[in-house]
Length: 121
Ligand code: HEC
Image (cartoon, rainbow, N blue to C red; front, side, top):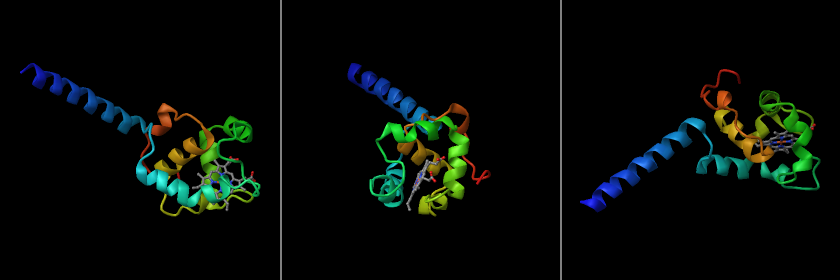
């Protein structure tokens, strides 16, 4: 009986955590990680290309200072050697925001992570 109650409590805690992850979109999904490696890393983990490099905070300092919305706009529309959508035609807005967090090290802002629409694309 005690074990069951313990299990129930664990289950509740787990559900709560899952719920939080869902609303705040803190963690990328497996699908988003695949989109990231298939579409972004060919340039952003390739030092011979002029793209800012993944895992190199110096490359991202000025970019991140622009704020998430401007960076998202650049990713959607493309800029310089950065192709529109980073070639990720399967990415929706939420995916792109998640990939930007992964790429730049930016933290999701509460306001933007609650948007699930494609409206601003
Ligand atoms: C063909 C190569 C290429 C691919 C593919 C690519 N990028 Fe880029 N990206 C670049 C280059 C080059 C720049 C620098 C552009 C500049 O500063 O003119 C850039 C810049 C950026 C920036 C900074 C934008 C800003 O505001 O300065 C972000 C964020 C970014 N890329 C994210 C992504 C994501 C996410 C993906 C995958 C969905 C991706 N990129 C795919 C080449 C690429």
